[in-house]
Image (cartoon, rainbow, N blue to C red; front, side, top):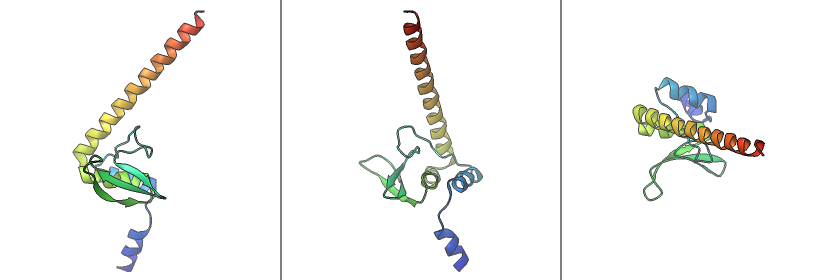
Length: 115
């Protein structure tokens, strides 16, 4: 029992959180809108808080040592199906933003090189 308590108190690394999510069939939901890089995760002091909901009705999920561990708390809360759907939507949004940026760079180069 003491060994289990010690293991639970030891912080999880980012790689361990990513592996646990994969093992549990969960997707960590990335977000370009968040400073931590994950939906539902914010930095508070030297740790990371996992929350679900909007600013008006947030549900506190817990604190973690890494952003990935807090993202795992969020993914466990929303479940495998919802976390996978949210992760896919976030990836699609990131790809669309990258494509828009590439088009802007191309237009800028075309405009400036034609002068």
